[in-house]
Length: 229
Image (cartoon, rainbow, N blue to C red; front, top):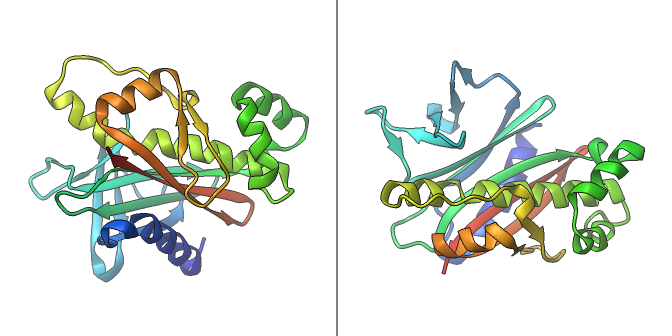
């Protein structure tokens, strides 16, 4: 992935954040493993800046500040797919409706052929099977890759709200990526929520998860923004 891909992805993120006036944000790509610092990651940004990332108890990335404590004022999400790693970040102002951020890359190869067909039957709902040809513009494997990346990005977008929840609540919220269902094929596609994801989003005060998507070579990229009620 090159500079042009990063600029396209950053523009997509800005579009999703625009209703609040886009805050400082960006998307950075690198070969898998380049940012590794033991259990942490050091993600370089422009002008010599960098993000030092740790992981919480649910393995979600969180930025470390200079005092080595977590900084939840900067939303961050990571994705690894084959040889590519991507990091999306945004510093949202106080009072913003934006509560969480997620990014995911999915390879079309995982959703093609006989093996992909078996996987698709197990993973996707009837609604997502109907949407896949539309999402892919006739490329079924691409459509399923978008649908999968949407579910993953939506799941990741709840990481920061969930971390804040556990700072003040004892009740455990249980849900996984399968609890999210892609709602439609529009640019702001959102997610339909069902089962434990519906309950968790209600408890966390999340009203919507807005999605944007783009193609990067043979991969589908989706960015998700969780907004408060």
